[in-house]
Length: 203
Image 1 (cartoon, one colour):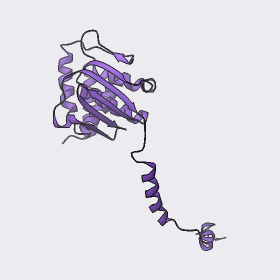
Image 2 (image 1 turned 180 degrees about the vertical axis):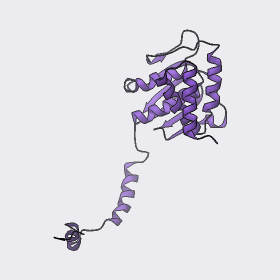
Image 3 (image 1 turned 90 degrees about the horizontal axis):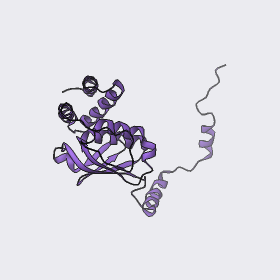
Image 4 (image 1 turned 180 degrees about the horizontal axis):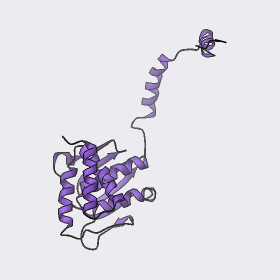
């Protein structure tokens, strides 16, 4: 079994070999490593994308807006992903970000997962009819796990989710009341022990 470090290094070098800068290649290496860590087919999809890239002129998107539509070929998932990371602060202000036609979307998905960690917010993504939840780069919840990712998605919607508790105030208070039973009332002996406890004068 290949190590994650070996995967990242090989991907970085392969990406440079097909024409990406060393900086962009490093970002691809991190993202494919992440996909393999999460059990998604990063290497397989990247190989297929690089083979297609020799025959097709996938479109770069450097400045992302609320609605994004390519003029001809589908968007390159790598440049799109890097642009998303670079513009994360401004993109958080959009209610919904829409894209049409993204090639090899699982590659773009890895960049979204990293964006979730950078922003500190969960990201909801909808690739055609498949819903995905990205949780601060810790896990990816998706219906895609039981099927292969498509080579192309026609419509993508992305939302940043505001952080909120998954419990009510009543549920919290009930739990906290139980926790209070472990609190120890501070006694005089505890106060004396805390003030310089364990200190000895060896002079």
